[in-house]
Length: 150
Image (cartoon, rainbow, N blue to C red):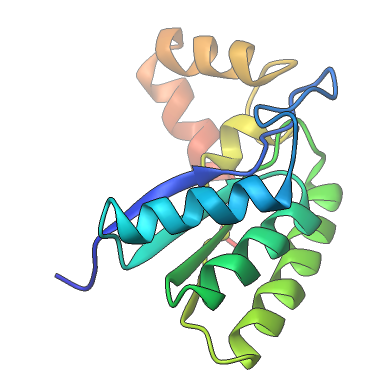
């Protein structure tokens, strides 16, 4: 096994602009990461969220603690173009953390076809998920085959 890790949410943004990590306090995040290292005995942390600056702040704190950082932007309801801009921003931030000596893994996908507009039918992630679970198999297969590969 490569390491022992856990995910840490820095704030997934929903379509209303609310996040799943409020209030955001970098000191509390640093304390949480110390708990992850010292009490959970983890050697890695996967940082998820939709705010590039929050991901970078948490990544720097984790790196200072000697944790391997899995830098994982998790966005919602962006267009493919907006998604690319966020991923490029996050890649630069993750590379900056790596250049300071940390072990960094950049994770570019987390259900992108469901949570990005334009890949699958549906106005939002909930509708796309319902469609995926209820549409005929051949229709789902054709839609998934049409999702760009990179």
